[in-house]
Image (cartoon, rainbow, N blue to C red; front, top):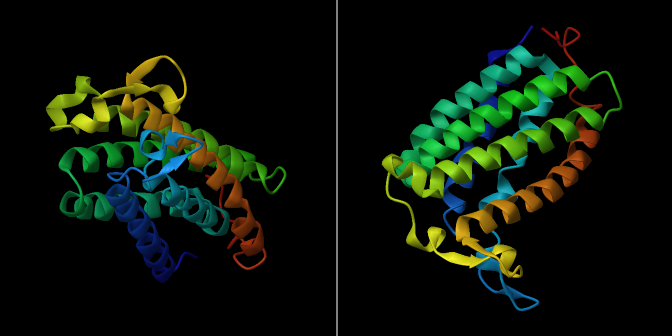
Length: 211
């Protein structure tokens, strides 16, 4: 039976990641790489957010999808509330919407694939969840079409070569979205290491119901 202490621990971890990511996504990387401005490619939030999928997947593996949804919803409510303090309201709204959609998709996919190879469920869930999360977050955060959600950063919507190298120019937030997604994929792959290491520690409880 799920202990409330476990929900509290996982929820605190989730909240910390959500708040940190919402704060860090406001800051593009500094410096250049091979003559390309990293500020046109990435924000620091790309390096922290994939950890949220690790937390969700570990909860799902140990206690099942129902418990994982509770952790996601608690992390969503507390994380978004705190994000209104640490970041712009538009960022908080976009983050909350993207987080909820991406994490719930991850839970569904993980649960369907959990009986297959140990790496398949966390990898597929986090990768496809990141696709949905990235699309929703950057659209709501920076696209002019959603200006009613609050003022967006002129730096984000100014034109720049896509990914800093392609001749075609587009709003800078599109390069951020593509760059962030690429990093999320790499970090998502790296998260298989701690997931695999913890599999024998955080074993399913009561067969971790799949309903």
